[in-house]
Length: 427
Ligand SMILES: [Zn+2]
Image 1 (tube, rainbow, N blue to C red):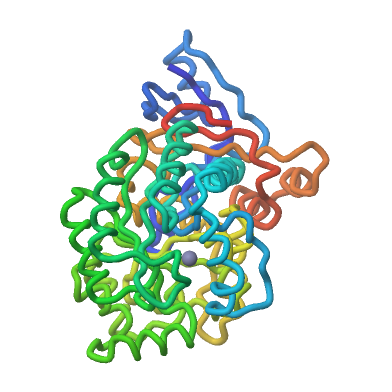
Image 2: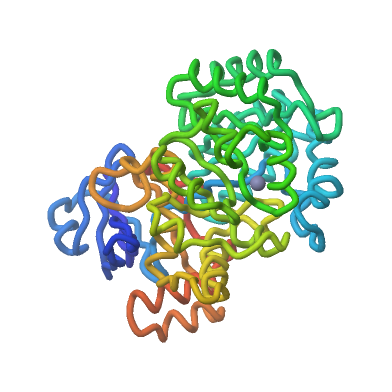
C-alpha cells in the first residue's frame, strides 16, 4: 500500500448541481491495488498505516487525472493550422494528414507522439477519434496499452464527400470494426468506440453499419461530430431532407445513448437538446477548436438548463494543444464573451468539466473522475518549476478556489510533474 501526501483538489459533486470544490491541504490518500482505500488528514491516514510507503507530493496541487472527451489521433502534426473555417480546414489541413496514416510506419510515429502528448498534458482518460485505416488504429491501441492510459477509440468511417483514400463501404467498415473490437475492447484499459466521421460523410447504409457494430460489441461507445459550423449543418440538412434535424441522423439509427458522445454542438435547436438529454447523450465541448475555426460561442447555459451532459474536449488538431487546463480556461473565456446568456464559470466548474464530467460522459463515473475512496487512483500532480509565474502566483493564492483559478490561468504540460493511472505512475 502507498500513501500519497499532497494538497488535493477535486469535485465529487457537480458544481452545476450545487457541488463545491473539495480542497484538503496536507491530505493523505492511501492506495491499494490501484484503488483509493482511505483519504483524510495525512496525520490520521499515516497513523493508521505506519508501515506503508509515503510518496511526498507537497507543493503544487494534486488533481484527478484529466479527461479528454474528443481528440483526434491522426492530427498531432497539424496542430496550429489557423486561418480557415471547418470545411476548408478539413480539406486543406486535416484530411491530407489523415490520408498519410495509410502508411504503417508513418502511423507508428504519430501514435507514439499522440500518446506521449496526452500523458505530458496529464490526460489519463480519453475518447479518441481514431484513423480511417485499421492498421493505424491497432498501433494507437498498442501504444496506449503499453503506456497504460485509459483510451476508447475506433476506426473512423466514411463513404462519401471525402478524398477517395479515406472512404470505405458499409460491409468493410462493419467487418473491420468488429475485428478491431475483438482485438482491443475490454483489454487492459481500452474500449472500442464506433466512429462515423460525421453524417455529412456517411450514407444511411454506413450509419446502419455503425449501428450494427454498436449492437454487436457489448459496452462499446459511440462518437461523432455535430452542429459545428453553419456550412456543415446546411450540407447535412440537404443530405438528409427527411430528418427533422442533424441530431436525428444519429438518433434514427439508434446511435444515441448514455455511452454516446457528440463533439461541438455549437448551433443546436431546442428539440435537439431535448433529444440529447432524453437519450443521455453527452456533448464534448471543444472551446479552443471552436475559437480557432471561428465555429461560434458554445451555448452552455442552454445545455445545462435542458440537462444535457457536457464535458471538455481538446479537439486536437483543430484545437490548439492537449492541455485540458487550457481548454477549461478557454471554456471560461467563451462563456464570458457570450452576451447576454453566457454561463459564468467558477474554478470548480472548470475542474469538474475537465475531470468527473468527462468520466461520466465516457461511462466511467463510478471508477474515475475524482479522488474519493473506492475510485481508481488516476491523478495528476501540478507542481510548477520554482520561480515560474505559476509558482509565484500559487504562493500568493487567497484560498483553494483562487489557487485552482491560477492553475487554469497559467498551468500547462510543463507543470505536470507526475501522472498516475490505476495507481501506476506513468510519468
Ligand atoms: Zn473533432
